[in-house]
Length: 237
Ligand SMILES: NC(=O)c1ccc[n+]([C@@H]2O[C@H](COP(=O)([O-])OP(=O)(O)OC[C@H]3O[C@@H](n4cnc5c(N)ncnc54)[C@H](OP(=O)(O)O)[C@@H]3O)[C@@H](O)[C@H]2O)c1
Image (cartoon, protein in one colour):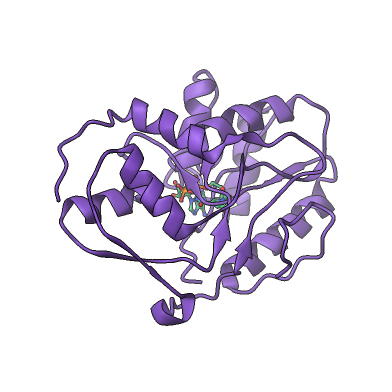
């Protein structure tokens, strides 16, 4: 497992505790010599690469399918596409999972995901302004981890979209998170142009798959995550 210290990597490690999990400090995927050394040392049957430089601050009117044309808008998307192309070239049997808007974890990771940041800010009494004109599939990392392991043994290669079922705006996700965790807070709807984030993001960031089943609906997954995180923490108006 590469990128074992991240959100998805740590969820996969929970499900495969006997596997070798390497964090960025232990093995950087940009270090070819070290990568080759690790591969010949561990001789893995299977490698999950969950490493990513994920700092994005960096449309069709239906969800994107695997066969749709790609058109990355920023540096993050372009680097992901380059990674896909290189991987398909050097390892045509590789399975490339595209996903979206991951949430989950136990709060111990340094980089907090979107719902965690919303909860922190609402608990601090901040009035929130969240975009209502960009859609994504909020995807539960624990569900994705289990699906990735199942797909790895399903003799599938190429690109596959694995996301929680359903599409949501970030604003809707923020509101649903507060409701699910029973945290009071105001969430104003704003447009992307009002917020002007440094990196361009697609209005329609929703994925669908013609190759595999979607994970359970994001609302159900959000509820399950809230339960595991102990939803009834103190609220703040
Ligand atoms: N999170 C999302 O919303 C989202 C959406 C769509 C797709 N994805 C994709 O899903 C995958 C997993 O994402 P995630 O949310 O689990 O990301 P994450 O929590 O940011 O974890 C990524 C991990 O990769 C490590 N890493 C960074 N550069 C590395 C390098 N050169 N070599 C080895 N490890 C390196 C990071 O270590 P440090 O923390 O030490 O830098 C971090 O532990 C990624 O491919 C990501 O692009 C994520």
